[in-house]
Amino acid sequence: MKKIVLLFTLLFSLFTGSSFAKDEPAEEPQEIDNSIIIARITNDDVHVSIPSPLFSFTDAEIKIRFINPEHTKLLLNKNKVEFIINGEPKVLEFVNGEASFKHRFDTSKNISIYAEDFSYSNNVTVYPLWAILIPLVVIALYLLKRMLSKK
Image (cartoon, rainbow, N blue to C red; front, side, top):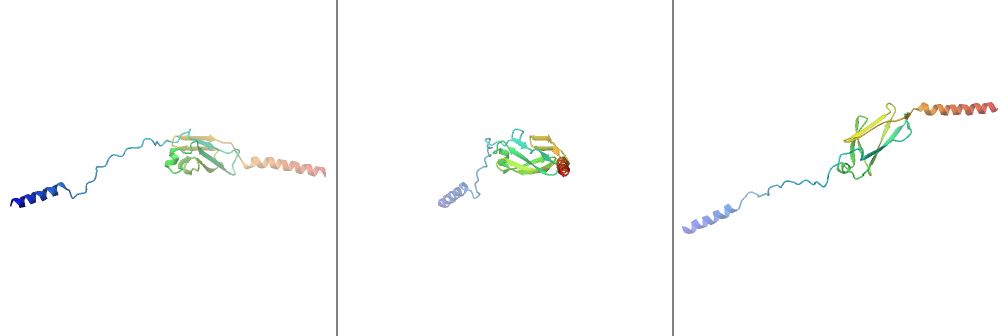
């Protein structure tokens, strides 16, 4: 009888020492990598260039260029950044830190571009079609009058 009790005690001690449940280590809190800081877009990061002269009957190509083409916002968003251009959101895709978009200045002579801490506003001089055609017509009439008066 002593042998049976000893055998059951031995078996019982083996089973209590091992668990049938899966042991998972406790999750350690993830540490935040402070070496990568996602910077906001500011006026010091972006340069806007508008062509000159501007005409009301054609689209102007406005270029936006990041001074640092490796800006963390570009890297995080896969070179796509949303800007608000004259009140309308527009996503621009940057290549080597540069992007461009077309804008027609037929109704408004103002351009405003915003993104995060960046703001750009400019009132531009736009030349209408008649400002080009009138001098050309005057020159053509002058040449025609000179040709007719020599005959």
